[in-house]
Image 1 (tube, rainbow, N blue to C red):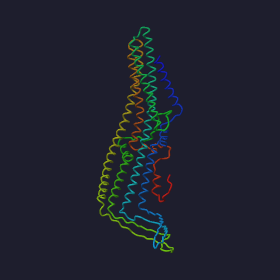
Image 2: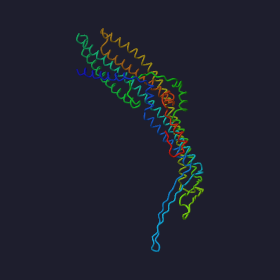
Image 3: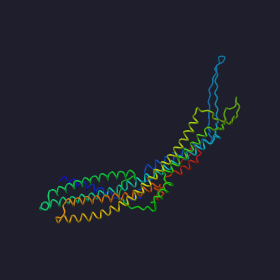
Image 4: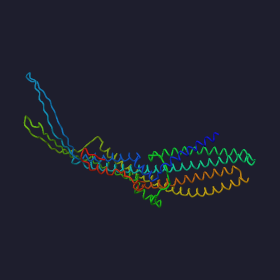
Length: 450
């Protein structure tokens, strides 16, 4: 009785999953498109690009004029000869300051900001790849676990039939209580395995919602790669070296470090500033009306700064050396990822072929054993073992089929080509390039950038 109630509950859960899946079909292409538009990881990385781009404008400002208005209100008093006198003076003017030459320190800083912005842009591409790959993994996990739920449901049904058959054979004297107990034990295992599959499916659906942005329904393994999968491992490595955002980020980091080293070295050089002032109100003594102004050039040459300048250069040089070493580490990691993904794809293809052959043979074996058991040439245990083995083969085929898709996308990601552009997703691309171009052209203090 308890087993019957449990099985009914599990069956209801299966119906609920099937009902939700039938509401709306969503292809993998549609899931990738929706995730690209709505996933907060990509949006966060895009904001980071824009934030980094503002450093370009900040450092360019060091080469541009600094103009400010100044006002002074002075109230003075005096006591002399027993008289108390007061005087109010108000002046209004403008101040101007501009660095004419700083040994190219500002230019090096601007180039460093551009390199760091490029690094942020490549980090955006890397985030895009990670999100799209996570979408694929979540998508295929739901497909895999849905199929496993159905397979294990069928397995429960089969063992239920074996328990009934064993009881029938026991009643007519052709079976034993051992056969019944063995069948019941396998049924209990099948129910536990089925419930575990349902639990895992719920986890996979939650992961799907996290990465895609909505619950899954009507999923399909069909996807057209349209030449995205490289034809050889050498071609994969060539693509990765040219396109992978991690490698391009490492190159941008080297550029930034080199510019930082140039800026630190330029700190030893002279600085020439142009400073001007203009007074327009109450600038001439007495009640006369007039304007006064001044312009001067200021040359500053550092002689001794307590060792700070030398430390800055040494630190910048060490940072440049580290960036070059880190780039080699990144290259090795990307190369390893490409080879690993290529091998995983090969292995998945081999596993599918092997599992298909095993399932075909297992079906024949099980059918034959059932016939032999019915005529007394085989035992119930033989049939139970054959069903368990066949279920294992079928699960292996499900695992390999979904793993193949994931491995293919992992290889595309390892080559640096898993992007909205390469997948031809119908979306507005999030690159930050337009914002960077606008920032490069900003002069006004208040200018709206969208």
